[in-house]
Figure 1 (cartoon, one colour):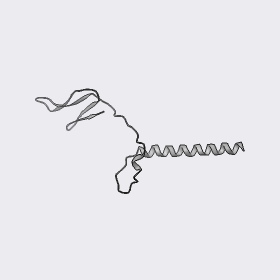
Figure 2: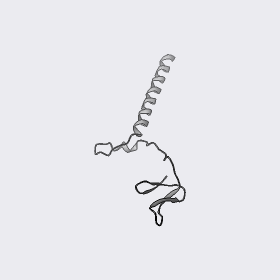
Figure 3: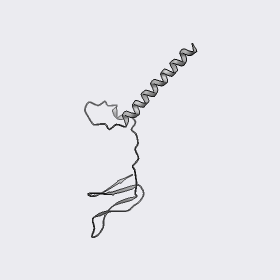
Figure 4: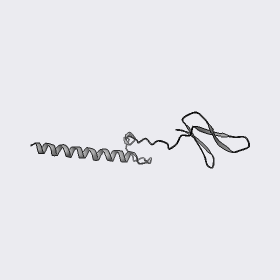
Length: 89
């Protein structure tokens, strides 16, 4: 009898672990918008991914030069490539 209870408990735990892993893995995948998605598809917990760096700078156009990153308050990051891009982090 005890063996049967233990076997049922291990089986239930295994099912819960698999279901949790599937939910975590599918919430990290990018979701495309489609009219065929469930109304509940947005309720899945989304993973939080931190930005790699926050340089505390913002975009500014310096006189005689192009756009550049200049010192700003915390929580702002700046990137200069083909243009200057600022965003919160």
